[in-house]
Length: 256
Length: 233
Image (cartoon, rainbow over the protein chains, first blue to last red):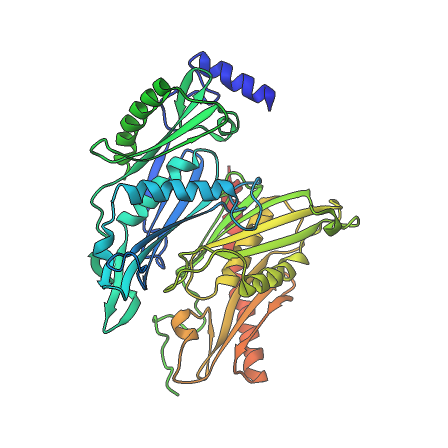
């Protein structure tokens, strides 16, 4: 691991990377495929290089929380499947899955991309809950960006099931879409030594110094931040990393 | 009798359309995709690798472990809560039995070969799709196998013996229904999975098993073709 770290760092400081990319390149291909699961109300697969994740939206009717009787809810869950990497084992979600889910959740929730009041059917009694499940199929690095993009794509693909006379008909999709007022896209910028890179591959993902995930909307507003890694960041780092993230979000948004 | 034609217009012995592909998950030692109708299974094989905790190890042979799981959004209607439940545990266990006796892991004592199957959408027949995907993935991983394993649900609807029931047929209410998931070996025609729920006479069951022979043979050819395509020059 020490050798990998030194080698990766040296390459990056020389302006190179272990797979030949430039610092600000996403791996190829970046592909979003919609409608990969007919049982979900909305679904999508995101591929970034060798990383593949799937997301599915389930819509259900629940009783609103007592403190927000006129609002529906959002729930985000990430499953790191042992199918997707030899590192993962069956069992309850670990801290990485929890962190991923919470960062994706905040990116969508805090951008107010979904108007929770519009999800209310009957005040204090019935409201839609938007459940977004993201699962890994092949983890080859940069799950933060892939998961956030998959969640957004699945939401864009989602239609409400038919609800009439107090009954839900899941087999019939209505023509009503889940309305998204904004499209928050996450880009995670990684710091190696004094350099920044995006979209680390599996090896780079093991040895970075610090990372900053930035969820931003198309108007350049930020909706979620998450710093990770063992090294600190300066205010100047944060400044530069946010600029990179906003610029690269434009690139990812074009893939939707 | 009321059931004169299948709900989706298929012949009595026809399966829904099948797609199979080997080598779909790069990180895995072997992997496969198997789709039958709207039921879609992804399988990944990891191993042989060391087995922990150690008390599970067998010093005489490696073991095969299967993990069947439905993705949370893979069921029509309610979300499937993540994590193992009684149903997925039972299916995982019968999968181990269905696949375990064709693999020879004596060269890998104290090891495990893990097979993970994830379903992204389901419309009945998911354990059979899981077994078909897993068998391709095991072969793709280069695990020694005595035979190909193929599975299909046969059954009875009213007085008709049918292959590959879908969700609407399983839920048929105008007459008796029997759902019989079967796994068979390609060469020997031995049965490695047999379950049934519903109502069926012995004679009908035997007819259904004869049908399973014919149908699993066709499925095996699709599985083998997927493997050949993976390694074609």
